[in-house]
Length: 383
Length: 236
Ligand SMILES: Nc1ncnc2c1ncn2[C@@H]1O[C@H](COP(=O)(O)OP(=O)(O)OP(=O)(O)O)[C@@H](O)[C@H]1O
Ligand SMILES: [Mg+2]
Image (cartoon, rainbow over all chains, first blue to last red; front, top):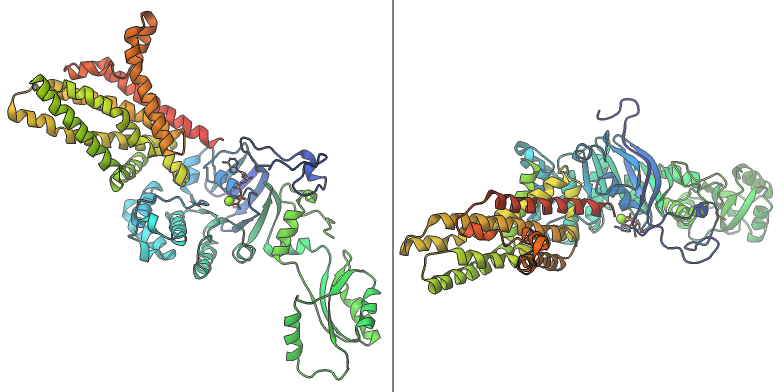
């Protein structure tokens, strides 16, 4: 029963929908029509917040680390609460570790380690008592209990506070106790709601490494607001906004998918007016602007490192160029500048950082298809 | 270990690592000690029935105080999320908690046994009514604790839960008084619902199967209702 030989998926979610009492699904028109953010279509009134999640479908491979990314109130916690059996969905199904979470909840829950948004701890218990309670609750056999607890205490560095009362712990230590109890019993699936919140920078790095090391053997879903964290830790990212899945891909894939048009960063030597005239006349150019901050510092050191400065006079000019869709600007740019006699000292393609993707996806949700695992629609321009 | 036992153990230790149990014990012991001594002086007989009657009134607030935290606090501090996503079933969680409250109350009763034991020093009291009286108080306590736990499932505030539990218990209490004033079928229905009317037999040394069953089914009904309420709240 456990695991599927045919497609090796540990988590399968189909059309999962949860509408909170008092919430309402987004109006049907909202997905096609571009309306100003936060306004009802047609009426222009502020929208009553659409609460819950709508029609989520995705799956997670065995051993994969998936990140949920989305702004506040997107529905990350709601999704996780449904996957862990804390609350039932309004409709749709979820299978975790081979068991339907609603038909065989005990079997599924036995295989899930869950760190909720607020670490669920009893303030009046010691860390030791808390962890042994959770070990018992998860059915860790008495014989191996001590070793199991020692292992998670070690992994989350809880040694110094092991005998302290939970209520006297700092926020970060509470978070670590929460993580330790999620890891207890070595569950097949780990669902971690914002696991690094409240930790100090050193701990954040350690916990990220810990989570990364869990991948492969465990299937992990984590949620985060921190984009670098998600791209660092996760193999795939699901972006959720207003309760809908608006994109799901590898961090690189998402960035690539979103840069519909080529972006170039170039450094050209020559008199400004002439160089800019040449750039403007280039066929296939969509837009260009002087590049100040971006990559300029890197470029400067790179140029200096290149050693001998060419004898030719004129300043080094840097530009950010954006091509029209499906146009490769590099060759025409090279030949044009070569003909004009202005050498290109540097040229590189820039891909959007995940941060940009995130902003773009979540501010553009009205034009996204938003259903299933489709990426953003071709030609969904953001200019 | 079964899940009921795991929950039970944590809950019992929860009572004794916080001041709750000690405060309740102290108040209950002082009050019942006072009732006991006064009834000894007043009646000049080695009889516990008056003390049992007074103890039962004390239950009106002891039961809500012992149970008000039980589910309200789990909801408020988020540990409900831990329990409900663990392999333990909702029923075993609620039953484990309930049994812990009954157990704590039983310990409390055992401590009060000091009073009747002291009677054996000075005279030869009839042991039967004392034992049956204790059984009656335990059963009544079990019923009251179930009501208190039910109240605790309705809210995330301990204070609200305590107040609700007290109000509900008082309602069941006064139903018995009303039954004396209302005639006919209505009076009988009210009398049948009264928690208190059933205690008299026990304190007089009579263990009636119907009374035992009444208290047990009363407790069962409220434990069941608690499970339903907690489950329903997950669907909101
Ligand atoms: N118990 C509840 N009752 C009613 N509405 C709720 C409840 N829990 C969450 N919501 C609503 O559902 C939406 C999604 O909330 P959710 O907590 O899943 O967001 P999130 O992505 O986890 O946000 P955050 O990043 O702030 O943690 C929000 O609009 C929220 O107000
Ligand atoms: Mg959240």
